[in-house]
Image (cartoon, rainbow, N blue to C red; front, side, top):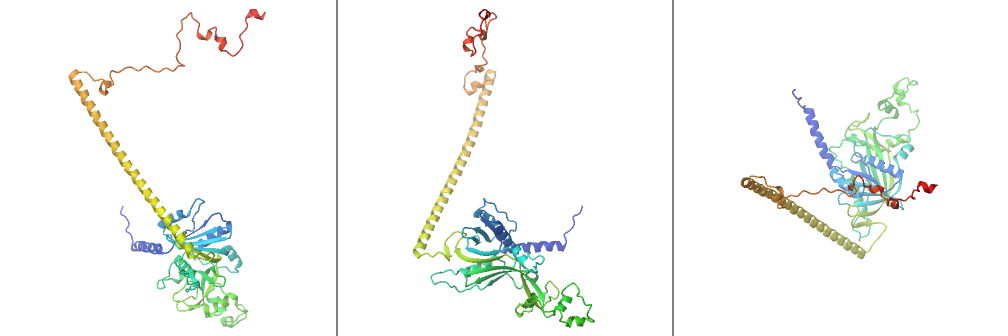
Length: 442
């Protein structure tokens, strides 16, 4: 049977798949998980955050109680995971932690309020969700993150600038020349409020509608269902008549000049043509959170504290902390060196034991050869086979007596003699009373 040749389309698809894999591997990936015992609402919040970070996240990640942070770090390397988003609960409230792999930094947020996706959908009159909106990463928007630090001159780290850079690196970068507008269907907003020193997190769905048409014209062009024109003599009466009342709030948002955008590409939907004006509308998907940044660490959930909004330390205390951390590092290095030395010693002992065992095996073969030579010489000179004990030098062979246990040994008795069971002294060993004779009964 001749094999079928592969067509050009199949080869091109394989090449494109390889290119996509290389591009996807460069994009940032995240793990979203919970630490400790949390309620059902927080578990649902974790699942909602996984939806936000799709498709570059493990949506079906299973976490056990025995798992520690080192387990996630060990798995993250081969899978190409670059960020961790973990939730934990304390007596003060709910906390969120964002860490950059493998060397940090780590940002700690306090979650003041949160709202789940199901709660937001229940509040909306017309919730919208486009098909395949979670196949592509969302668009990131950072609002009012100040580049200049508001802190004192002593502080080197600008927390808000560092937070902005970390959030930017969590989502894949956008190439404007290669971007397909149909892939931009979601938006993630981080809004910094300076008065309360908090960050508002929102997640929206993006829809685009054509602008420059009346409401009745949109029904004819955009909507698939035809309107009712029984009372109109001509289509001009339907288009020119304004008897439907005022526009709704959503249409007022579309008519806002700030929402109008000129499209550079043709998008999905009727009327969304190239080089034509369209309006952007956002509908909230959820979840919703209000965060407060209170701590930044240099390493991966450990290391020097770069910023803390609640605790302030003097320079002497910082130096003491640095010295203690350096001492711990030195002790750790010493332990590693000792472990390596112990491992080397064990390996050397193994090799020595192997050599000794091989030498012993060789000597055993040599002794057997000498015994064979002695037996051959004895056979040629004497004409008989040499006994085995003589070869080994143990002297003449002797038959060993069989071992008989004490219980099996039986005494030989003559026919006339009584057996030991019928001896007169048997009543001494018996526990019961002695049997009376027939005369004593009378």
